[in-house]
Image (cartoon, rainbow, N blue to C red; front, side):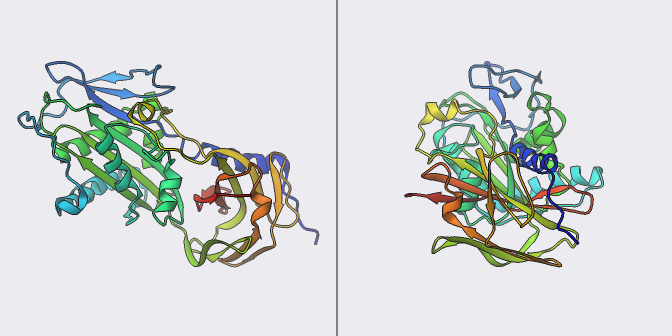
Length: 354
């Protein structure tokens, strides 16, 4: 029987899915007046075009007396952070249970925590960090091997100040999570959809705060691979192999996206980053024999072996390098029996020389 070619329209639709992954706007609470009125702002567009979607007064009522100190509390300084993460996880899973969605497990990837600590250290809210990295770059640098999408939130000020009420971490977690689910219209419900995405299996949580500011990061993960050989770039060949944990998943392609090398960012630059992030510029797809693609470059795999739940894929690194030096992110995509697309990896490879 002749091999079925992938139709152009079908291939384009798969690419469109991955382009949308990660398009989650940021969520911020900031204090605006002497009465400590908390405004919820769904931030869209650029920093000069912020759209206010709703306002609530005195929503966090358990915050204690004001203080002039700003002592940073990091995870390795207090065992209470794990308790806070379990509390945040319970809220997420309670909301998922209300929709008959499976629970997510707590991931041990440290990218979310690293990002929250970076935000509180430099007083900013952004998907980019002070090194200029996007979430999937941070995730890869922390040994992340799966698909991921980030929500980031902040309450407090973007500068040091002696005027504020003291942060109550549990109240901040509950308030920010509920707002991202129920008051997210200004972000086109992107936070909510990330939290309630049925394909999510895990979440890594970042929590950092000082006396008056609270940074909160959720990195949701899709963990569907038992790796036999995680993604490697050795001797000019990128290769990977593993077993899929969901029986009806079949690898479809590796979509490759490009970003320029990240550069360090100061406080002003971080506050003026876009309030959502994309996957970079689509440049190519690694495809099995007989598949075609309209947009971008088609890369023929050296090996594309799929047997039941097992897969083994390799291709030449140089075929991926379409834009010179920079960061190339590999999105291994699979489809289930209902043609639902799963983004199985967000793995970034830095090419320093060509």
